[in-house]
Image (cartoon, rainbow, N blue to C red; front, side, top):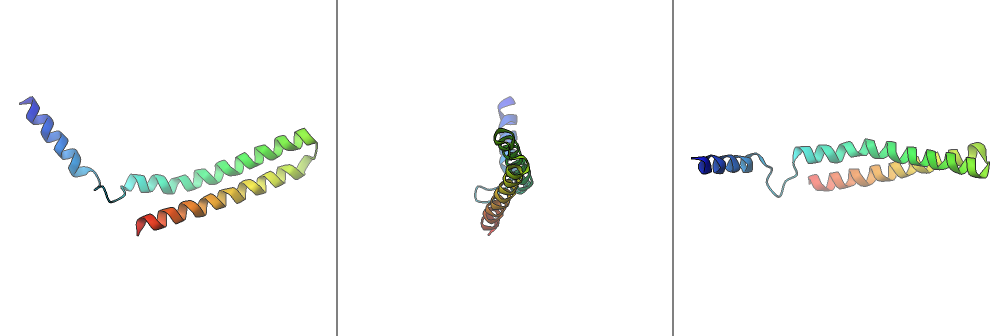
Length: 91
């Protein structure tokens, strides 16, 4: 009796899983939600790098602004890469 119950539970898992050729809804949602996280993280990394470079070299606002600009640019480059990867995967 116990072995039969386990076999039925395992078979029902296969029914609820996405087929191997299709992306699951949660996976697609995870890929899309990584866009916002990537934008924030790259901007903060550029900002912090510019801040510490300014403190080290004594060029108060300029390297901070340059680092912020590079961080934002890197975030948008990653935004386009992720959006293209999501777009080609859906077709």
